[in-house]
Amino acid sequence: MVTKDKRTVIAYIGGGSVNYGWKLFSELAAEEICATVQLYDVDKQLSLANETIGNKLREHPDCKSDIIYLASETPEDALKNADIVILSFTQGSMEEMVTEMHLPETYGIYQAAGEQTGPSGVIKALKTLPVYIKYTELIKKICPDAWVINMTNPMSACMLMMYEVFPEIKLFGSTNELFPALELLANICEKESDIQTTVRRRDIKYNLIGISGFSWFNEATYDGKDIMPLFREYAEKYYGSGYEIKPNEYKVNPFASANKIKFDLFLRYGCIPAVPDRIVADFCPAWYTGSPKAISSWKFSQTTVNYLKKLKLDKISRVKTLMNGSEFLRVGGSSSECAMQIRALIGQGNLITNVCMRNSGQVENLPIGAVVHTNALISKNSVRPVAAGKLTDELYCLTIRHVMNQKTLVKSVKEKDLDIAFNAFLNDPLMSVDLNDATELYKEMLAAVRTHLLYYC
Image (cartoon, rainbow, N blue to C red):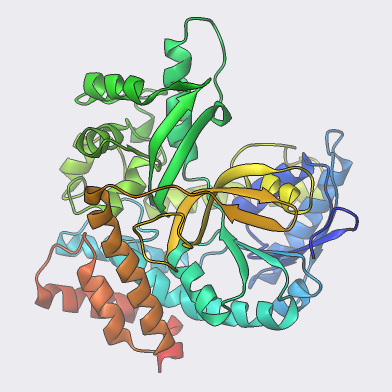
């Protein structure tokens, strides 16, 4: 049972992370939370380093939390007495990511993010879901009453697998994928305001509907005023050129874009894509990703493995100075809402935020049991989804394909049958090649990750 009256125990699977891990440590340090965070990572040295780095934050003059970080030898140790479990890790190596992202390009298939859909998303699921079975079984055995926060992609497939193994699990998915769209809306509102004021993304209120990676704002307000007409003005004005908060940033930062895809999809369907252009592009047919030239014309960039490697190396280079105290992680930040979600769960106020959860009717026209992305009210030991309504018919047609592919992937893992997974591979909207080429690509991609496929033997 989660409560603010005792030291909360948080198990962090993937706790050697130098990316989301460090960001979470910073955000937790800014909250008045009393907790023990038990870190587990397959790379024990990274979790040991993070134990020291996390504990050093207690010396920071701005630190508000009382958190002790402990590296755990095994996932069982990390999960012991856990009130909250965080799952955030990438299964496999950077070298495998090269294959997942770039081998399809030899067949003319280009992926922008490759996190949840496309050939890469299918292979990621096949590698990751067997590990999720293992962790879910441990949670069911060791800490069945814990709240589980998933931050791993492919989000929906991972969560579906957990629900399959442990139907009663207290689970939701936490993501920061809405932040760029909210910052865009805040920027537009600030620019058009009659008075000089700072508009923050949290000032934008919205109704969210869809699935992870493919969710939409069908209502958005600022200061009580409907801003959908204002967004239409910007979409019509900047459809050709794009609109950037930082001009040309997308050329050097794959997490940025000129929002041209947002404008195009809004003008088509009347809803604002709630996720970055590169992510929503992967959920569509190859309208925006048909070639490098097409990607460039839509003013966004692919997430390359070299870019991700550089980010990781930059972080790794800071480990020594963070461990010896000559540098501290900053206190605070706003790269996720996980810390605020934890605070609400332990009874320190209510929070309305976006989460991924099993559909119990909050999205009226998607299947019950599918993993959907909507708003929810988080309070002490409770997460209650907010009714979002119905997807439009056009968006339903695009979305249901992914929902069924996710279900197919979970079935393939349950039955240990890679032929079933091939149906999802073939049915993905980005799969623009004929059956023979699709079969060969699938075989090549499986061969590149064969060490992860012993589960299916």
